[in-house]
Image 1 (tube, protein in one colour):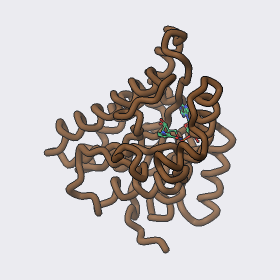
Image 2 (spheres, rainbow, N blue to C red):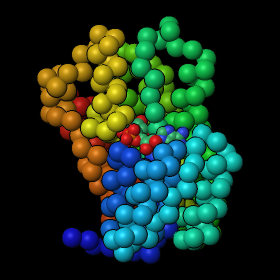
Image 3 (cartoon, rainbow, N blue to C red):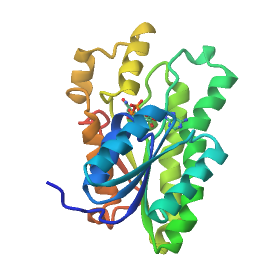
Length: 256
Ligand SMILES: NC(=O)c1ccc[n+]([C@@H]2O[C@H](COP(=O)([O-])OP(=O)(O)OC[C@H]3O[C@@H](n4cnc5c(N)ncnc54)[C@H](O)[C@@H]3O)[C@@H](O)[C@H]2O)c1
């Protein structure tokens, strides 16, 4: 049952066309938010926006590569013109490179840093002025267990998530006294396209991320909705005194 915790708020979700992002879009809309979905997956994003509108909620899709400044600026402008300045921002879009460190190329470094880190910088910088003018808001960035727990073949990925971890804290500290909360959600392995591809690539390089190993580390695969619900908590007023923190959604992966 909906509690309308985000009633009337303009919310922007990056990576909103699939996986946890799409779950968050559905959940935020059920809670009364007017949602701007940004993603590179055009058809899935349009379909999701349409499905949400058919259920009586408000959503638009803006095809956006979050690593590109021009795209991000257009998305934020369209969100603002349609629903008002976003006061809820879920920076979720991201990707991964899985391969031995010594085989990692300059191009892969630039690409992953752009998609996972530059994206947060660009999007947050574009959204913050409107959020401040609106009197405040809440930002959630998707970090990972990989910000604090290393997996072989994922040096580059862990590097980007370490940056996201600190970015979340730094924004929170700088803007706390102007009504902004900024937190990170840090999932374990999730049953999404990203998570399943990661497990498959790790196996290809001889890193055992089988069901048995995952069961020992985190009980089972995390479901996308479990991450979306954590993000909803963090952007809602229920988390009014939660700021600059890292919420691990990993069923003890990092607690052991
Ligand atoms: N799946 C996992 O096991 C896991 C664990 C921890 C953290 N994460 C983080 O979650 C996010 C991945 O999301 P997911 O697991 O829901 O997977 P997913 O692959 O289903 O979703 C990622 C979404 O981001 C979009 N995207 C990718 N690059 C983009 C770009 N340049 N511009 C705009 N959109 C882009 C994709 O199209 C997709 O819709 C990443 O930030 C990842 O680091 C995933």
